[in-house]
Image 1 (cartoon, rainbow, N blue to C red):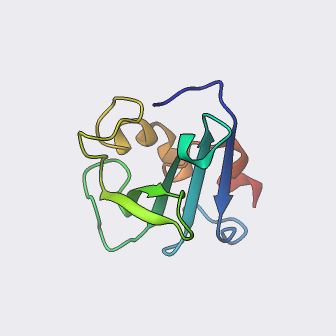
Image 2 (image 1 turned 90 degrees about the vertical axis):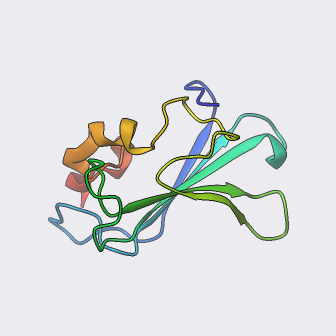
Image 3 (image 1 turned 60 degrees about the horizontal axis):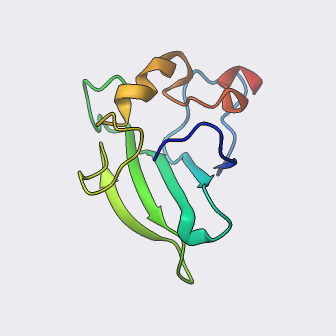
Length: 119
């Protein structure tokens, strides 16, 4: 469930090069949405820059999206692709790029603290 007023933590595996206009292939962004005190109440999502024309025409070409389960000893992939399965809900908007494409000038990364202009 996409709730704007709950704590969130975002992780980036490596900063892009100074002056970059897009995140490099191999970039991993993870967002934890802390909807409760227990990890079982969290929603954890990721986007990974695959490149190679993955998901062309989406407005966010090159990105693959993931839902993660962090309740076990190691994170596990719940789903991956261009949108969550119908059994999962996040923002009720379908394809991840339907919202993320609004940040096309920042290579589809919505978080202002991860603006390419910062590097």
